[in-house]
Each structure stands twice: as C-alpha cells, then as structure tokens.
Amino acid sequence: MIIRNFYDEKLAQASYLIGCAVTGEAIVVDPLRDIEPYIAMANAQGLRITHVTETHIHADFLSGSRELSAATGATMFLSDEGDDLWKYEFADDPKAVLMKDGHVIQVGNLTLKAIHTPGHTPEHMSFLLTDHPAGETPHSLFTGDFIFIGDVGRPDLLERAANFIGTMEKGARTLFQSLQKVQNLPDSVLIWPAHGAGSACGKSLGGSPVSSLGYERKTNWAFQIHSEDKFVDEVLSGQPEPPVYFKEMKRMNKVGPTVLGSMPRILRAKSVTGTLVDVRPGQMIRDAYYDGSLAIPSGKGLTNWSGWLLKYDGPVTLIAESQSQADQAARDMATIGLDVVINWIEPSDLDLSHFSPISQSTCGDLDGSELVLDVRGINEYRNIHMQSSMHIPLGYLRDRLGELPRNRKIVVHCASGGRSPIAYSILKQAGFEQVAEIGGGMNDISMRCPTSVVTA
Image 1 (tube, rainbow, N blue to C red):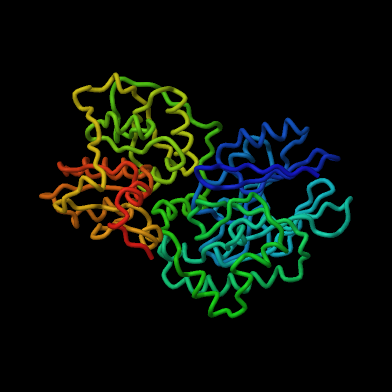
Image 2: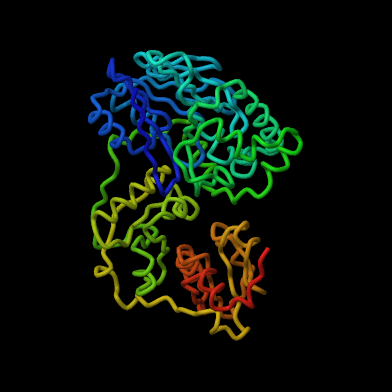
C-alpha cells in the first residue's frame, strides 16, 4: 500500500493518493484542480490513477475530480447522500458512480468504505481504508471536513456562506450524531483530514498532517463533549468569517467545474484589461503602490483574498515582476475557479508617475486625530486590539466604506502586515486621500505601545 499526501499551503488543503503496489491501481481523494502533482507522483510510484473521489461538495476550492478523470480516464465516485439540494449535477457522466453509505471502492487489494458523515454538509462522506493483505483491521480514515486534527468541520457554512437559512443548528446536531459513527473504530486508525491550520472550514485546526483516532479521542475538544446541546453551542461559537466566494465554490462544484486541460500560462501585455491587480510581494507594493490598483501580494493569502475581492465574471490584468510570478498567481486564482486573468504587465510598462510609496506610521506617531482601522478577523480582534480602534474585517471593508470618515486620516493595520496593503489599496481605490499603514501590525503595536492595547 502506498499513501502520499499533498498539501496546498495557500488553501490549507490536503488531498491524497492511495495506491496498490501489487496491481498498480490508485485513487485520489479530494484533488485540487491542478492535477499535475498527482500524475507525477503516480508515475514516480509506478501507479496509474484509476479512481478519483471527493468527500463532499467543497466550498473553499474548485474540485479537480472532473479534471483528473478527463486526463486519466479514472472513474469518479460521488456521494449520493443528502437532500436534492446537494446532489451532483454531473452525476450522469458515464465515468461517474454514485455512492450511498456503505459503498465499497475496490482499488487493487485495498478497499475504501464510504461512511456517510453529514454535519459539515448533508452529503459528506468519509472513507475507511483497509489494506487486506495486511489484515482486516482498518488502516486509515480519510475524513474530509468531518474530523480535523484537534477540531471538527464547521456546520454553519451552508447558512453563513451559502445563505441556506436555518441549517446551522440542524447541521451541528447532525455532526454530533456523525461522531458517534466512529466510536466502534479502533484507536489505531489514522486520521487524514482535508484541511489544516489556517483553513476557514474550522476554528482551531491543528498543523499536523495526520493523527490517530485514539489521539483525537483524548485531545480533540469535540470528543470531550457528551451532551448534544453543549456540542451545538461550542461548535457554532467562535467560528471565523466565511469568505464570500465559498457560496460560488459550492455552486460550481455542484454543477461541475470546467475542465481546463492544463493550468493557465498568462501572456505578457503592454496595456491593461479590466481590473488591475498587483501581485508583487508586499514590500515591493509598499515601496511603489500603483494608484488605482488592487494590491493582493503574492504569498499565502493570495488565493483567499482573490476570492473575497475579485468578481468571477470580470477580466483581470496582473502587475507582476516575472512570468513565473504571474503564472503562479493565475494558478492560485484558478484553484478557486477564478479563470479571469487575461494577461500580466510589468511595472515598467505602466505610467511611472502613478507609483508612490505607501505612507507609513507607527503607533507612537499617532496624536489622536486619526482613525485607526483594524482589518483583522473578529477572533483576532477579540483577543487583542488597540484602544479606540475601529474594527472592520478586511473581507467586509468594501461593503462598509460608508462607515469611514473622509475628513480624517485613516491608519490601517492587521496582524503583521500581510493584509494591510490590501486594505490600503481598497481605501485608495475608493477615493480616500489620507491613508497610512502600520506595516508591522498588531505585533508592532504590542511591542511599541503596550499601554494602548486591550486584551481579552
């Protein structure tokens, strides 16, 4: 038996290739749209990808099941649980097989048994892997967004992100019942989740790539609560803001993602088409911000903030330093279905008179006349914030610009400087003239001005 995991840091998403070394067959669980890593790994291990499946209709990335099936001929195994609102609309594909609870996928001398584990979503499946030549004791459970390391999948996304009103509490109670389904599995079963720390699909996900069911029973908060009502209260409290693009991801993954054939390679241009998005590193943008552009610096947050801030039907030109930087940004956007990047342009091909440094401040520079705008998440703000600061999470800033004064200087900050250039660019795009940034964010404020900080 061969198990290989793939982890995308920007999405905090894990997918898996499981292969039978005897027959050379392999299955991929929860693939991303960029399928080259799976094919390369299968080739390196002497495997051929014959099966592909996913634990549920994902909300935070565009599934690669159709892409992988088209490239390899693999059979797609899709959940047929849940109500009619959460059925795959491409289930009539000749390569698709629908699964109910208990369905067994045979991959050489391995089996993956589908266990219906709703709560995060109504159709959610987990897959119990058994390596039969080694014995009949189950080896691993691929839990998707059911059980994470140290956490469980949030049951509120259908309501908070997709606007299915009244589903939060029902989902939480269903999730509690799903946890009872694994009580009879041995402690030795390995847990392979679909997400790690940084994902918005839970509130306290751990950073380890794998755990065991026994360890989670002892350390995961969800297994410590034996009252359904208390579990409901706990799982629904303190969840982070769900990105607005989650609703679009749900729709696209249900309908069936467009098959690309390959990830995009973007052409360089001399002129701008549509929205101008600067994907250079944050410090480059600070040194020379292009007036009117939306800054989404390259790095871990690019995928998430592109989904929050860009339209799915609007063309985009990237400001980038190189072809590879532009291609990577376009690839990151394509993983959440943003197939909108038309071309890219180098800074030298733009009007240099429109570039200027982002104005910098420190907490020690403030004299009280400014409005300090904190754009971190709600849980970060509750934990620690600056006295008299105004809090608007970055993803909601555009919708709440009317709450901000135009006759005062606005000094924006986040935790350590990753989000504040984005906020700065949103304010400048909206015509705010007096804007500055505390580039070190709350980390800098806590050290420089501890008396101005309020902690939970």
